[in-house]
Length: 457
Ligand SMILES: Cc1ncc(COP(=O)(O)O)c(C=O)c1O
Image (cartoon, rainbow, N blue to C red):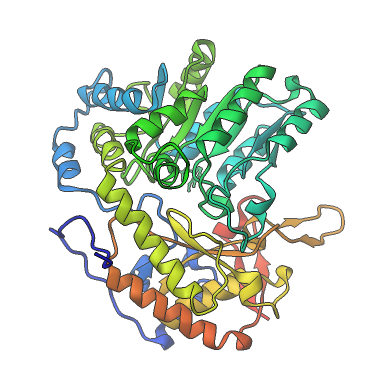
């Protein structure tokens, strides 16, 4: 069958509110043209993020009832720890309230001034946490990963030649750890192959550098390995995931993605000494080690959700539905990161709006227009998010790519919602020559895209 169907029935519905173009224009002005500042009520289809926006299953809702809220040693903790150990295989599991808390514990313990942390592409909170610890975050994705139109089955791979050169230049003592983000969110939601995970792992082991996976979308990455990498066709997603993690020394995880939960995460490691130091920090800022930053019921939802994310029917639907959106707009000429990613479609805003230079934020211009057109909220991943203001000259430096991400919440929207999004993008595509850039009126020095206020040029 060609028709994509959701592999679930809907048991509980949440109304969404229609708005007029005039209302949306007013909301944009009030929000300073920053869609993070909109009220969710004023959004029709929310593709801002796939993080924490998952619809939970009947089994997860049932598991919430089992939540044991004991301060120490709760039954829910043991269920959570068992599930994480079963899939990820690491000796120590530290529960945290979300992914960036795991990053803070890891980098806060391992990194200091003069250190360099390579990854394929660091996610924004990952980069910010590394820099906060005084170290430098370096992106070493393969060249194809930086060219939106380039087709490569594993565009999230790290360039191991560049990694080897970095290790030679810096010396292993200045590299406290190396990371790989699976899938590579900031690089277009592109997967990393098992072969690449193995190569990076081997290089790190040779030089005694700890190797960690940023595991947020590990199940989607496992599905891409199964469908695209030779030798994995008949393998179950869980077996592939276990193999991925077996090559690393630990991982950071935001359970708000492939944990199929609305909050939560963990840090996992095989290093006993590191785990002790991290646990001290965990108690200081997150909570006791058997709940971290979560309620017992959250631990239950994640313990269940991690397995649901690895379900073959679910993964097939998830990846097919995302690529349906990408292929239907690309067919009409809309430039997207090819091939479509796992959790999101990334439009190449620089190619969509060639008349808007990077420092005039073409991605933000498209984001604003999609909200104005159809109440769709998505996010700029370009110069607003990753650009830099030179502290001496005040000049703005553009990001490497100008992307707009349409992230698909898990199990939330149906195929007709996806068709609506396709129609809206194609409408804006028709009148793309009329769109103009934006300038920043107010910004914070770090993670400015969350709070900045802008004005149309
Ligand atoms: C690749 C990646 N790493 C880390 C994070 C941070 O996770 P959290 O938002 O739970 O702090 C995210 C969140 O979107 C992500 O996509």
